[in-house]
Length: 413
Image (tube, rainbow, N blue to C red; front, side):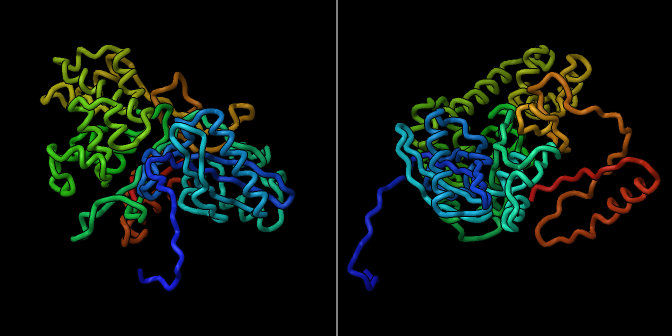
């Protein structure tokens, strides 16, 4: 009504469609590769920065994946982009119809996630390409010997989960939409969706043991208006919707009903239901001694922490008892795996590592006999780095005396 133009724009409502992203790199010689594709857990309508993002995509068919990949390469070549480019799609959930939402011929927040998820240094490679080098001349950071002209092959799953701090601001709506409200994010790496989503939940809020609805019972969960209003909470997304999905599953909601309310893909909902079903089985046990080796291995492979298992089995069972049972009695241990994005065709030289129970051996040989220095905790926004000077000085002194040393710190920001 206040526009000076007599024209109006009528757009199709795409809310409920899948949101998919591709990171593409092209050089001056027209070499073009797709580095990473990512899929939003939430349907279109929520800002990518406020949505859970999974890499690589888990619900696309082979035809959908390659159609979107081919389109991304065509667009980048048509626009003449040299460097890195991010393309976001809206994909119809039941057909192969798609729309391009936006094309960012620059590094974006998603580019940072893609770099961390694949070990492919997009910013570094884009800078080299801008200086006139081609992808064949740039070294692969994973192998240090092959070229950067390759498409990473991931044998693991990455989950990015946003972190909010809305309780600090009064009169701010907790509803999620097209404007971004998160203040940070965490990234979890594993070999199954259940594993990475539970890892990420614990990283976002250390007071949570894993994927369940306990977050809704906390005092600061002010946007949750109660179980009587659960369906409204599922239809209208807030920062607590993941936990509202957990509450609905605990109350017996079917996957189809949840899909109708949230438009979240059924594949994700089935995986979350799997976690809830396993939690229910644990509550029926009388003691942690009822957990045999196979069951313990299955629980750990699906992301259950020792603390989470202890809370579910019995109220008087503690984390130490579960760990003692797992380590000393059953012999269930995690393994250290190396980020290898070349399908083991070439040896990986990177120190980019993650831990998982979905394995049978370590990728690394630990023979350094070094020293681990514990840091002073998280660097929150507004604090300065000099507060951890003692850890830095300690490591420098150890290395000066020929002792291998590293700093391990916790930083949720």
